[in-house]
Image (cartoon, one colour):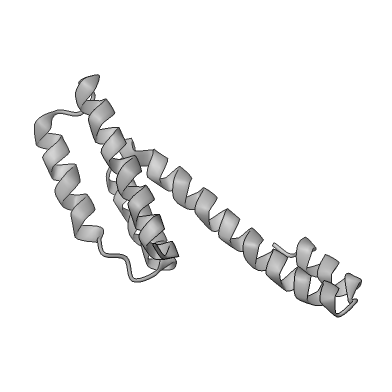
Length: 108
């Protein structure tokens, strides 16, 4: 499973868990669940992680009951950014350029 497939799988999982919980505790009725499901299906497939982020943020802005999706995407992006930084830092460290590696670590 590639990264985009894994991301899609996790977003679907979070979405479906929220539907189950909402139907169970009656915070979501069947009519709303169907609307949410149709709207969620309309944002797929994702072309990239950035596309998934943008579409998920738009979906959550319209259906804020799914704020867990936003939380997950924010965490995903933070982790992705950290992994990119680590990769750059490793390259600088291999070249014995500690100052450049630390500069990368300081960047936002």
